[in-house]
Length: 146
Image (cartoon, rainbow, N blue to C red):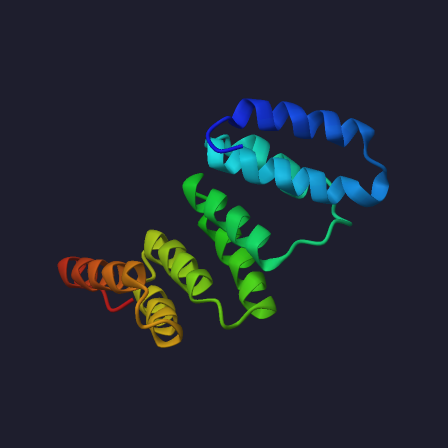
């Protein structure tokens, strides 16, 4: 599937038509992941949210949260990623992504707290360290205590 997203989407669409109720969630989530990798955010969200009875794992929630950030829906991202954190509180990446959403909203103290938590969980997560430093600089420039 590497790089051949259209073929993967076609195959998963065919599988979705042939799959019974029990397997549809799995196929939709897989196709949503492919749409995400392809950068087709709307179709990815459609697959991830098409059936409310489908169980989302914490990785699915991170993908959806990332899509919400990309689309500028930071509150949706924060809600979705917070739910992921409740399911998997040791996931440093989840705190890092939620920190990005807080930073984009301009609520820097919450962004910094999330980046700090990500770093506490995984001190080698350079992305969290880098984003924390950028938020601290932005906070200095704007002079906000948020």
